[in-house]
Image 1 (cartoon, one colour):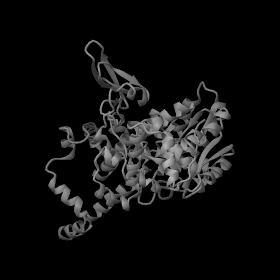
Image 2: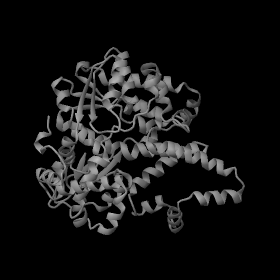
Image 3: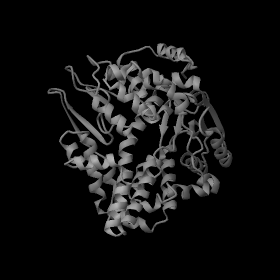
Image 4: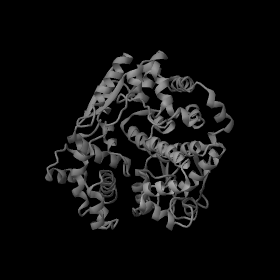
Length: 479
């Protein structure tokens, strides 16, 4: 829920557009722009508009209409699910079997009282969604797979989805997102969401919707959140390796440890750490940075303080911070775009009992030096077989170098330079070799032009065509 308490009235809506339409002026939240560039997500109540807040997950509002006083309360936090006794008891369990049991119950709650013939499984052949597809089949409600294949992606999600669908014996419907439809889809996703979309893959959402609706499958099940819950998110395995290496260095003689540690450290990071006189969490508490993010980090660290091993504790803290950081805005984007297209979304991995299990699962079941999501892979093995349960899925994203880099011309004299006053020379140097940052900037640029300045999407597409970028019309993207 988005809300605003300015201009003499209180307004709220389940998408940001209606609230924006009531603003006397659209003031940019510059701190949110910076946080977006650093973290790829805004945490807590921040939006990209100064005068609009987002109600964070697990919270509610009370509003006194006489005084227009708005207060927030909390009914749920992820870290409150942690129980030290349960965590200790889970060291000796059959974790894959327990995950399967809880996920079966979650799927049962999804389909209970609903017509199974309206469901479809959104799946690119990854282990999480395929695992869920296997459970649906075991429960007597096999559902077809729907896959959106990116025409120039690093791998064919269509081929991966076919292998999974063939193994499960279910129907597969593949739609394709080509470069021509990517650009209007990209603009439409930003217009529909009303904020930067974080990931260019969001444009894929439109490609297969018409087929789902025409086949009477408006209820889509996703494998979302497994990576965040069970150690599949990109930074978890690298952090695990770092913690293991740090333990190794701890066994070295002090002088050798100092030399090795200094040689491996990034000088710029060391310099920054030496100049910061107060902990970053404390600085956040006095308003330097996102206070809500700092409070979240402190709450998670306090909850996991009962874990005795410092490396294990640090890894579990990172995993739960990932969940808090990224899950809300990922779900917001999906849910809002889906609602505008007539789809309902279901996420069995985010069933409360599955989340509780993940929060209280020792990290040894999640990640080791070579493998992430260990428990998920082992649990999926009876459903998918060795080959599908072990394979990696990376590369189904839109090809940033081929599809996004050509949009760099938009930054030459556009919203980012003129409205946000980013230093042009410095920005050119930074973006020259950094595709990820370039995309983040283009994301903000397109949001600024479309949602702040009110540019016509068709004119933006015309400007792209003038630069030799082949793209369909804006009106061609629809259900």
